[in-house]
Length: 171
Image (cartoon, rainbow, N blue to C red; front, top):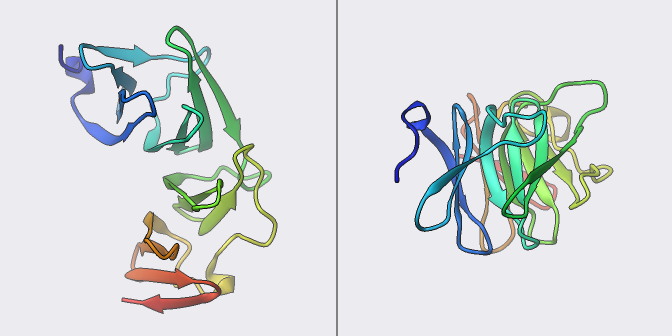
């Protein structure tokens, strides 16, 4: 019981609270329950542009996509998706979604820097980090939060940006 032949390139993976493995591929999202894979298709959304996955404490899945951030809720039969605009009037391409450690999330974007948002998808005011706040570039490829709660951003062309409070250190 393998992934379908047209879904053999894994882009990202996440383990859900129920132990299921979620896999993002170029052809969509699949869920492995320990026995078999099931392709997940939501009404009017093929989920083909997923770049990053993060399981949340409520059993949902946050998806970083070429067209923003989506929360996917799956009840075993049906997937429901909710897409959230991160910058009003602009398409924001999200390369990675990570937990902020306090119940919210960071989105590392391709051209809009880092954007912090809440569990209901609302952007946290004054929390967007761009070159205006000292980020070396707005082109972020990946992100991770360390055990101290600091956030590290992998950039395109500006190396690693270590964000602690309001300060950056570059490597």
